Length: 424
Image 1 (cartoon, rainbow, N blue to C red):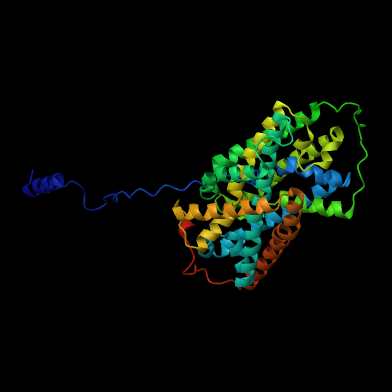
Image 2: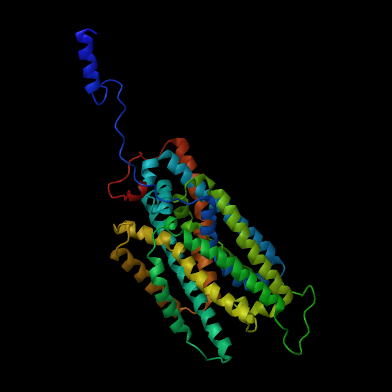
């Protein structure tokens, strides 16, 4: 073999790696992708937001409207679902046109849409409605849970003044709720929503069993198969409308759920499934209560009109637990918006815990001052939740479409003070 050939072979053998055509060095491992919500997870979040209120608190308002209550319920629920889908489509439009701008405002998407459509003044108005609706929803949640626990104490001891007082239960439930509020956004609360949906179905089934098998009071025959319900009045219809709007309103937290979805375009499927399930449970309970227990129409809670039994106590306890879990996801939109304004990190910190505990303490104090549950739900639904869920979504969608066609959107550049931590 020639010497030059031997030298070339030795040089080639001595090289650990060829100089030309070498494979590129391995890339560093990418950070783990944060967990996202599927369409099923999003549907569970929405059902969790509705909770047991449509099952237990809605029958009274619908029965007061007579047989027209069912038609009113279907109309309001269909309208709520339609505006919810409009809200989700509006966020998809904004995200498609301004991906960086919307990514910097993932913690306050509803206010961001209002700002994009109507400027800074629109953001302030939407934020005011959002904060009032979410904070105000804590009041009926705490009232309902405290009334349920007081009911268990009275029925167990068969005394009107037995057990802990209503005010003590409010404070105790507030303390129990504090650690659960420290969780982050809906994508960190999958187990909460899964358990909550199971509790809603279990409470509905137990309520149906209690209504169907409860003994009739002595000296009172069962009602006719089709009892005569009172004709609807304007006051009853207004109160039922307010309760329906309040109890089937997921709009304040809906965009927060959509932001955490793996495929935000599937929000419509989640809305359809969740509204159908919750409305069906509510209407079945109303039908059973109207046919079998007409005396329940005078109570704010269906369970309060039923005699004590183990299934009743189980339903009360499970309903109380579900209400506490529902407030965790329901308050996420308010908490994240305020935390972004105060520049609080999305990671767990004492500042985040202190802010959320302070808001809960204020809700407990407000609940102590306003113990009338149906009136609170009706006022919140008509005054705050109605504009937030029925008026603003169509306006935002129409305004965004107009600005997109006119190419009048701002540049896709997040502000300096925007918090883009969730854009990863």
